[in-house]
Length: 159
Length: 159
Image 1 (cartoon, rainbow over the protein chains, first blue to last red):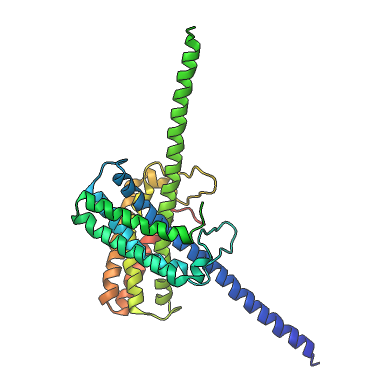
Image 2 (cartoon, helix red, strand yellow; image 1 turned 30 degrees about the vertical axis):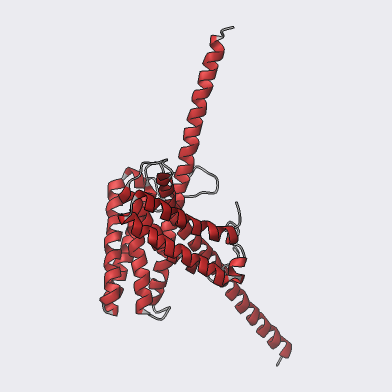
């Protein structure tokens, strides 16, 4: 017996399953993106910290060690932007948190400009760390840190 | 009035405070190290995944994209070892977990040898990804993946 209602129910259920599968996939992806961007920032911070300590005199200044940290930060900087892919505004699984403000995605051009500044200045720091005087390095370290702060002020939730 | 007991109590309490402060500091550091090594591995995985998908034909092979991922993995590989610093065996704060087995620290020489193999092979992959044929790249991708597995089998808690 032909049953149009059963057919409709089947189609609706198939459509719903597809929707749910797509949405589950998007959820996993969003959380993976968040995890990735936080990881890039953690590696940046891990290397930024000792440079700061050296600049403040809390740690003895070692030119080679400093230059290595600066090179790593400059390498990581341009990797960060991938971590702010569309759709990664919110965490969807329990236990995943993001400090990224939603304004990142509504003002993406400005966000990208600010990230580019970080790329440029950290690149300059990596170069100057190898050849510059202590004062030049310290100045450029301050400028680079300023690009972090500039972006964090606007786009990171305060802790 | 001189009170030797009060003096002793004061000294004991001061010593205890120092001990607690040192231990609290060590705790934070251990968790930071764990967070760092997991971040390095996350960035590695983020880049390894799409290479694997391309090799399995789940994603269209794009030589430049693949080579970029391979270069990033090769850059990250030697950064990982810092994340297994002595004292970072265990997480000390709630919410921090580690899949690193304690054998890493009791068999550090073997662990380092295995990590070095990952460095070497991922370095070769980055080179071959730019100039090699698809088959050469696929072979070296397998070899590199093998160095991950080889180390994970022995030193990572199975999920």
